[in-house]
Length: 262
Image (cartoon, rainbow, N blue to C red; front, side, top):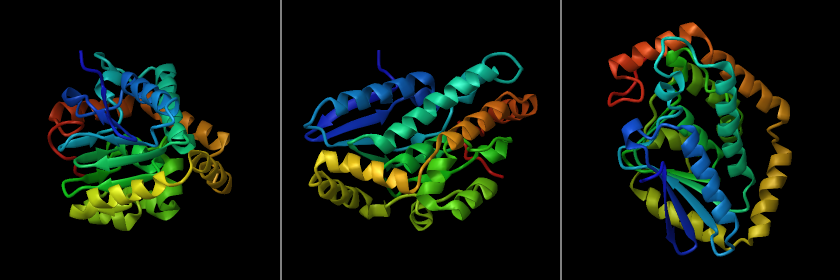
């Protein structure tokens, strides 16, 4: 049986392909556990220098699997379950920023909501010609709370605020302008190759030291993390938000085949 993350080795590169096609690569606990296990594998192998996270040609990741999270009833998400999920997701993002391995994201399709958190926490990210990006949470009455400390650190406060409230759909060039990715368009694969070749010349201990130093300069504090977890947990447990999410899913515009529009 195929898992939610497929692994392949390419020399010094470990590729993690998100593989939940039936759920448009939405995030669930099993996916986060699989990413965490893959990082364990990479960090135990000195021959691996880089971990590359990717999706498929249509979808990179559409964020939290809200259909599974809300369950089959008509009420909101259980607050304790919401908190556990938020902490698990945050821990993976935090691990990206602390791993002595280079973490990169290659986005070829849709990247929405929590999928942007993976990009924001990565060391490098590229957007291929078919990529699109949207922080869509506000459109359903939520906020991208858990990923926000990482996004602010990547693109700055004002851009993160605009992407949250306006929820614009960004193409590759716009994502590059926003600072969300490091290269975009047809040149993205070659740009990623050069980024990774350059970083692989840096000793692993120096990579880890650089991450620790920059984290000290622009820290994501325990207080920030608790604020993020508390905010998204309370919102997911809100009946009004749950009703709106279910309505959008019934229309097929949330984690479905059609793009969300404001």
